[in-house]
Image (cartoon, rainbow, N blue to C red):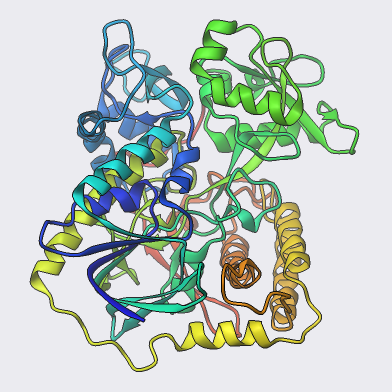
Length: 585
């Protein structure tokens, strides 16, 4: 079946919905989503969305800009970061006017709280001197992403955006560097659909399921990354994978940074507040990469707590906060601890470990969300990306908490505006013959395979090797071991067999295609991590423990090379106002 829309947006999280709201009346817009829209991953974001509103104390977008550049370990592009931080104030007020129910302070203004890595100068006359935490995160209790998603979805329904829920996009139709649409499987029927479009945006979210322990939902299989990688479009900075310090022990379910923003502290088996050793100024509100490494160091040096299954954890202590804060400002977080671990945060600390959380790298774009494919700024006409799947790059080597929700609304909007301009000026590029060929052949191969391999076995082995060798601490030997394992798994994937041979709601088939996406995404992560022989932000090489600005102050671009090793190229980091300096907290 062939559909035709002026704009097709893949993904119904915050970035995709915010873009859809910019498509003008009189032009058609379709939003395709693998899940029902209000189940998109934006809904799991808990702690807040940042903007220098100054509702609780003096603040400035320039302070936010400095924190984001520093948090990125100076790999973020400063032109994009400036746009995001400056536009944050307008973006939050716009959400408020759309109906987003923010928590309020005593004055009736949007309430704000501290978050990791967000600071202001202790002395305003010395902006590069000592800094102290600042209340910059706007929030809705600890369900900020949930209410943001609902608000944007309601506004899209009001506007008449057409949704295609449970449509699994499998391929991008691109020819001569001009976008022509996408191919999708309708999960309910198994039918293959072609969406012919003037313009396409990928807002498909992250790839956390590449790793064993993750805060990501089971749908986070890196589909957008893998599709463009397979189509010869590069991925940028894939070596930078964020591990959030506080995932529930064994499960990885997120315990938001909001818990530490409200005063929670991390403790080891001796009851010590160990972050005082690693970030003496801002302690438990240090950036996520700093805290994750500190936690693993505590465990390695024997100060972790061993569980009955032999794994280790540390403690997040909220007991001193009292029921007023815990029950009113952190109800979801503390509910998770009670339900999944049987721990009452009012009376005892929560067992936590770092969990795979966020992709700093992704599809390379400019500040208007237009996809670019090289260091010269060459675009794929009509193709856009926003949100976690995109790399603007505002997060560089490490994202600050609350900047993800800000990223999706700022660059989702900018991308939507550019799409609106594009569809007014262009006609539909013709569809190539057999536009659905890759999808059709892949489905046929998987349905007819008599191989002996199982999806679950290959996926588990991939997640284990990535967690063990390409997570918080990395070495050349370990990454090479992971690469060899990925090669082996890709060969075994060719012999995957599924049991369900039907069409309707064939989740066996969907999971098999997702596994191929996980393998391609893991390949891009591992090769990029092996190539970067320095430590920067979330990428920590024990064999190269120092940051190396002379050789590595540049972005990685990795290109798929069929059955050979990927090709790696580079593009410069945009530095406008803040020169690289030592990153201390």
